Length: 118
Image (cartoon, rainbow, N blue to C red; front, side, top):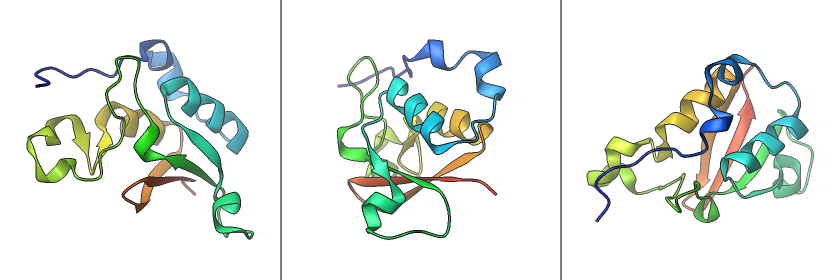
């Protein structure tokens, strides 16, 4: 049973880097990989056509932090694990990505999309 939970990719979460916006999809994809996200491609790759906003396709069911804890859990809000997640997304990751000018959106239980906040 998991009693404590911390996001372990601390080098990517220092105060200076948390405040820096990421403007390009390529830069954000690289950042997400460093945080443990399984980046599959762009929203365009996922949908098979051009989308209205820049987006990133993430395999939510195959994304883990340095300790092997899932970064995404679609069902977390219904169980005791909710203290680690915000809408099924690891809380620190939500905060960091938001400060960088992006936001998460579930597509289905195993697929997460990330979009640039306009």
